[in-house]
Image (spheres, helix red, strand yellow):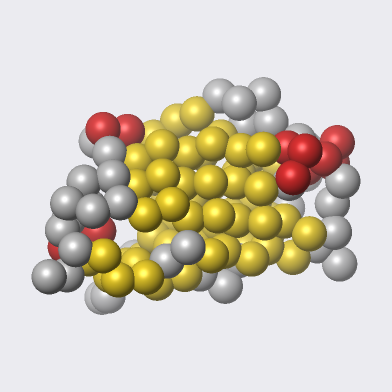
Length: 120
């Protein structure tokens, strides 16, 4: 059974950094490469939004201005995706979800989410 587990969330002061990890278990690295991995976030009272993706070939895409402070990467050998978040702001407070979308059949994998709270 394929599962996703995020970690690395927590409470951080404005201006601080966090690095989230997303481990996909139940896939070897070859099959993992068939997934476009992404990070979503959902703030209280708002819709879940996709803001960063990385393909099996390592191509990254970001929504809006996220690239200025956030960086997505992946280590296929460890079937893991990372999200480096710098210069965090209170408005970045949200539950962050890892997602995998298969590039051939569009099937999706979801993690349970990890809470990020930016507050002084």
